[in-house]
Length: 246
Image (tube, rainbow, N blue to C red; front, side):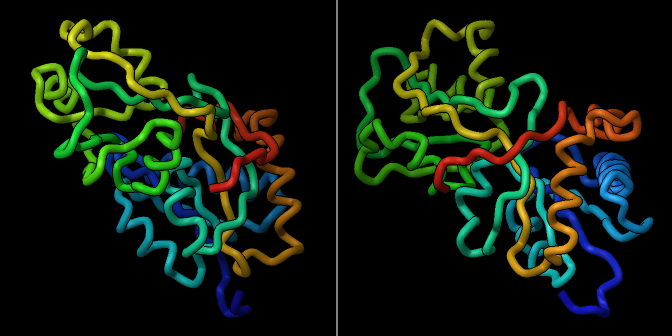
């Protein structure tokens, strides 16, 4: 990292999730301040920015001061190699926890064939989608589509359109309550995978700061300021990273 850079940037990447940057910015600012204080860094040495799009997140991570990123597992799988990401800690996300399964559903009685589209909030990460469905043979020519309109996609699938929907654990848990749930069936379930993590961009976080920050994040929930900042982001805290290969 250049000695001219006075602070480091933490990019909160949340493709496909609700909320705007304007709504989230005060929350990630509070988190950055609490994390820096817990790591005994000087005030203002860690800043944060929120982006709800894949391309916006990638643009922000291209900045030379972008040393850290909080991201969902699909984003990490899709971009770990090209962004040179190194895991720091794993997130414990409320109410799911540290790991979750993803579930693929489609119309009851339908057979997957050519022309099928898999829609998901994680559809921006086709590498993740294919890995999550590794035990289920994808039809030739399958399309993978990113959409935050999960309910609409489920309704289209139940109506018989050639659509399958890949759901995270919370979305799958809500499925039985839908009025058209009987028209859908589960065709594949992933192995448990991490929900989210904090990763470093290789070479941008000085080694002398890495371990203090890791230790601070692991204990952040034990401080009043840290617990308050975490809860506003639906986080219980962080645990040591225990990740499968991306």
